[in-house]
Image (tube, rainbow, N blue to C red; front, side):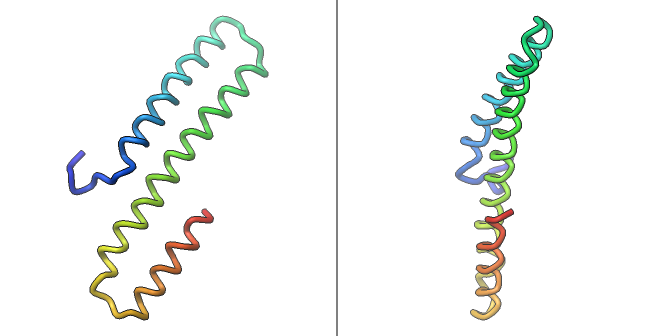
Length: 92
């Protein structure tokens, strides 16, 4: 990863994904050892949520920071439209 693409949240995202990776490995073991489907489904839900949150954090930070760089030289009216886009993107 080059420094130009690094964002402040990247270490947090990496930690979250490492935890999800550990949980995913545990889920595989749960399946192999015959744990209940309910237990497995609950753990899968937790891993899925962690990955979705990591993706959301990565994309939101990219939108927030990279669009700021792009918008800086634009006229105020156009920057306002970009700010509105950044706000509405948080609902994705």
